[in-house]
Structures are given as C-alpha cells and as structure tokens.
Amino acid sequence: MKRKNLLMCLMLIAALLIIALPLAGCTGSGNTAGTTASVTTVASTTASTTAASTTAASTTAATTSVTIESFLFNPASLTIKAGETVTWTNKDSVAHTITEDKGIFDSGSVNSGATYSFTFKTAGTFTYHCAIHPSMTGKIIVQ
Ligand SMILES: [Cu+2]
Image (cartoon, rainbow, N blue to C red; front, side, top):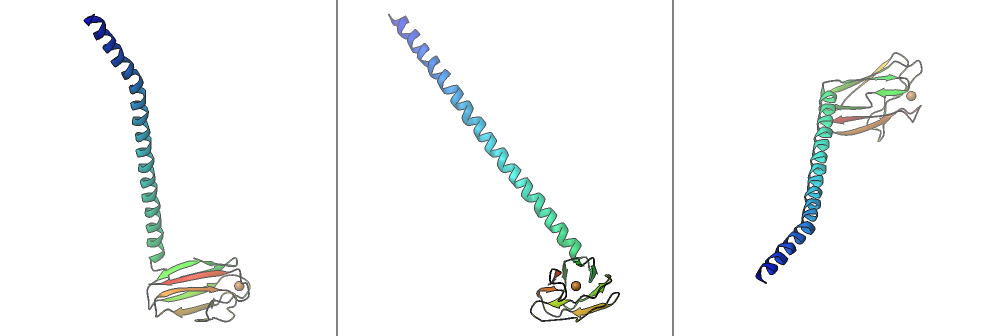
C-alpha cells in the first residue's frame, strides 16, 4: 500500500514537471528575445548619434562659402561661429538673390559669376531664400 502511494506521488511530480518545463522554456526564450531587441535598439541609437556627430563635425569644418549651382544653395545648411563671414558664389548662368527670410540681410540680384558676403555677428539660425526662385532655400546656423 505504501509503495503504491509513493509511485502515485512520483507520477504526479513527473506530470507536474512535464507541464511546468515547456512553460519555463517559453518564458525563458521570451525574455531572451526582449533583451536582444532592446540591445539592437541601443545599437542603432548609437549608430545614428555617431552619424549625427560626424555630420556636425564636417559642417563645422570652417567652410564659410556657399556655392549657388543648379538652382541650389550648397551646402543648404551651414554651421559657423559668430563673427565669421559667409561668401555665396553664383555659379549658375542666371541671377539669384540671397534673401534672409526676416530681411536681416538681402544681397539683391547676384549675377552669374558674382559673389555676396555677409558677416554674422550674432548667434542664431538664419533661414534664407532666393527672391527670384522661392524654391531655393538655405540656412546658416551661427553658434
Ligand atoms: Cu534664384
């Protein structure tokens, strides 16, 4: 009689283990997947941060000239330090203007081959456009 009880007990334990093991397995792999996903997110964030700082570094690299070519300001966004002068050179065959959106500076008509310079004394973001071709836009960030 005692032996039969022990056998029943063992079978019960075995049954519980069979039920419990796959559940434990599922939970385990679920957690692993979650951890892997968050690690991937961190990695991609790091990658984009690196890309952003690389862009900032190359923009800061004392380029104080903007070329106007093919109806585009190049670079469209330029970061400089307060006190620096930006020179725009018109390499198109038609005239353009460099007109600050709030009227802070305005080159007037800059003919083909001509240049225009403006010294940025105060920090801020200055967005500008071409008054002749309003789709042409650019930005100077003064730090
Ligand atoms: Cu233009």
